[in-house]
Image (cartoon, rainbow, N blue to C red; front, side, top):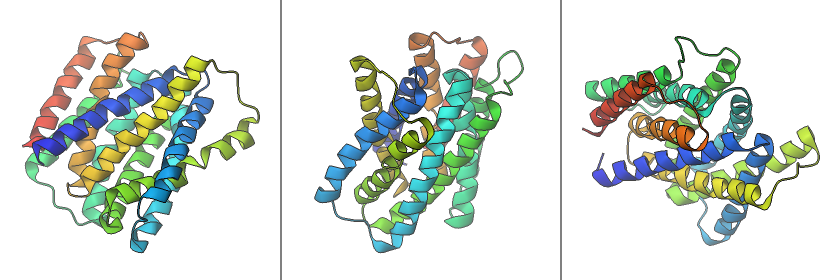
Length: 275
């Protein structure tokens, strides 16, 4: 992987941790997620008129990814209802690189080197260890967090294959995000009805978070167009380092020596992947 792509994926990791912190810090996470998707819809609707459509062979993947992402939205909201960012985010993100690598090997016939396997193991192990506090993980949020991790692995594999058939990573990203984002407002109306009262600052924060999420995952899809899915995914999951820091500074969450050690393991794994 080139240093430029490595740098872009690292930036995507920071952006991803940031918008997840916005969602976790929201007073009504379902409404925050809906506002995020409204912002994404506005941008991608304009993009639909300005960008070419992806190749026809990629459309089954576009549709499948949009559906998986919709389930991911609901699972992520449920995850953050029951646990801290510093606990739930690592479990969700840590379980996905191994799943992505296995999926890429099975469905895309990608070969992963021994060093990359070591890197993926270090990153995944370090991320999962971040979730443990006082030797245990809270069972209340564990099912939702693991379900979110499975969905992350699923949509990453689908997008990794689909973008290579699309002819353009930008066209694929815009189409997938458009189909994905339009599902959230109807779902909110069915489940909740009227929206809650949000301040201007809360609304602006959620809308900005949606735009950040679009940029963050757009970078990842672009990187997967030419790079191995497992490696890109594992590098992206270093976002837990930034999530731990953001959680400590902005959400006043605990940052223990155990978590710091886990972050060092993740950094070592990232170095193996970048070699």
